Structure formats: structure tokens, C-alpha cells
Length: 441
Image 1 (cartoon, helix red, strand yellow):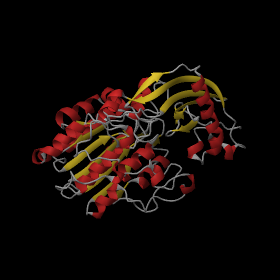
Image 2 (tube, helix red, strand yellow; image 1 turned 90 degrees about the vertical axis):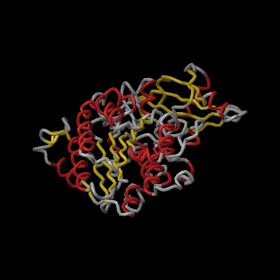
Image 3 (cartoon, helix red, strand yellow; image 1 turned 180 degrees about the vertical axis):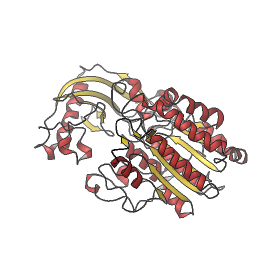
Image 4 (spheres, helix red, strand yellow; image 1 turned 45 degrees about the vertical axis):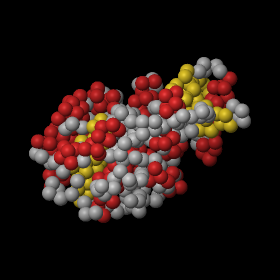
């Protein structure tokens, strides 16, 4: 069974319904795709979510941090390399080529048999033919060129097993409504493969890494939820559904269960080793569950490896922003910025609390607690949104708090939900700190 992974950056599930209307309809009505309605991201931006899907690991397990910034990713056994080792031809195709290269060392040798980085870089340097503002190569959108390259690869390899990873990143991040310009492009790509019978022996996954992460819409409750719930569609072969009805049944059940990119990784591992042992095979550290196996209805974010900050399967109870606990935790959050910026104090201004914009108490839903027969509710978590000065940065964080022992800790990453632009240009080499820094000059 061949595999096509088509990634469209920054598109939530609901954004795909709104902006990719024709593609959404074609996937469900013609290709009979399974839509994961509760797929939850596992990290802030692209890299940690792609790491979960292609390696089955958290970023910290790779490992990766600022000290590893100059170490290439060649040694890591990405999922397409696992397929290559089994004789598959592989494609890695990306327009921006920043998933593994932005403030990182990227690959120093070819990660796949077909790799378009050289063409992509040359295209962007061709100022006479490349329009940066319009995201076009002469009269063609770059997203369309990525899809055309993938389609040609599939056609070339149609009689051989292949693994294609095609990533369109440029069109959708900057403007909320730009996703609609990809609709016809993706539709034509899917239609070409389907009508020319190029999907007869292929698992097709059309997905995103996360929703919109910054801007006015992200500053709403709906925007916060959508950021965490990316689109995820799987087109499983019709003959496979008939031959393996239990796997097909489990896949459909799982469309209404809590899922993550870790589960996609385990599903791909099962595709690679497709046999009767799928139902017994265990996932890496058991955080991921193949979609061919039934995911428990009572699964929680802890089971799935989701930090509380990113989880959408919890209940939010609004708390008054003047509450003493919220003020106490907000001060703690600002002090955490000071610690993060302690080594760049000569470049970055000291941030102070301007306003507490919103606060809520986060709890696992009562229905989940009952299904798991828990007698004691978990410790309290608070989600807090603050504005800092100078600079007007907006941050959102989830903080664990044990009132008895005055224990506080950040649970997961901190979200910067408005753009920092050139505010942090003085530490451009430090990607991790850019969202906190307001340069002195």
C-alpha cells in the first residue's frame, strides 16, 4: 500500500469546511474519506506536530533545543525513511522548506529519493519570476506547483510502492481567508489522482498541523479551540474496507474519538507492517494508538500525550480576572518571562503586566471522570491570557496550581497570540525567545 501525506499549513477542521468547500465535499462524498472530528494538536507550531506525526516523539525526545540548532536531522528515522528501508520510493516536497530549516540545521544529505529544496530555493532567488507578495511563480501559485510536483511523482511511481510527503506552507499562514485560494488547486489534485485511478492502492491523508495561531480571530474562544483542532482526512482503500471490515469499523469509530498526530504515526507503522497482528501491536510508549484499533471512548489528554495547555476535551469555567489567585498566577507567568530572557537582558526590555485579559479554570469533563470511575478530581489548572508592557504582547498559558502547598508550574508551552513581527529582530537567531523579546533598539 502506497502513502500520500498532503499537508496544508494553518488550517483547522472548521476552516477546511468554510474555505475548502469543494475539497471538503469531494473528500467526503466522492473519496469517502474518514474525517477525524476530534484530532487535537500536540505542540505549539509546525515542528512539534510534524515530529509527532513522522517520528512519534515529542520535540524533547528527539532531542531538540537551542543547543542542537546546528545539528542536522539526518540521523533521525522519520517515517518515510522506514518506508524507504522496505523498498518504497520516497518524496519530500515543500514550498517554503522551513519545517526542518527555520532556525535549525535541516538535512545535510538527501532525506528522500525525490527532494525539491534546490528548486524551491532557486525559485525564491529568481526575483524576475517570483512574486513574494502574491506567492506566485509568474502566473502560478506556489501551492499549485507543490501539488503538480507531487502528482507527477505519483504518476511516475504508480506501479511501485511509494511514500509521498507534500507540504504547502506559504499560502495559508498570513491571511485568514487565503485558504480559499487553495480549494480549487487541491480539488483538481485529488480529482486527477482519483479519475486516473492513481489511488487504487494508496492511503491518502490530507491534513494540517494546526489552525490559525495569531491574529484577531485567534484572540477569541472559537479561535483558541480551532488553533488546537487541525483538519485530518483519511482516504482508506475501498477494497481494504471490504477485506478488513474490523479495521474499517474501528477507523469510523475513531472519527468521533480523541486523536492526535501520534495516532497517525502509529497508523502509518501499521500500514508499513500490514498484517493480522495489527490489533496486538503496541504503540511507542503507548501514547499513540493506530486508527485501525479502537481508541477508548474514555481516553483523556494524559492518555494521548497532550499537555493541558493544548487540550480541547476539558471544561472551562470563567474566573474573574480580579480574583487573588488569578493575579498571583499572572505575576508568576510574567516572572517566567524574566527567567527566559535572563541571558539576553542586554538586548530585550523587561516586561511587566499591563492587563489580565481572561482567566478560566480548566477541568476534565464530569462525563470522562465518571467513565474512568475517578474518586478524586485532578489538581487545578488555570488558563490565563495577559497583555504585557511595553509592546502590547498577548500571551496565553496554562498553569498548574496546588493551593495547599502554593505549588505553581507552567503546563505546556506559552502561546503568543499576536504577531511580534520585527519586535524581536535583535535575537533573530534564538527562535525560542523571539515571542517574548521586545528589543531595546
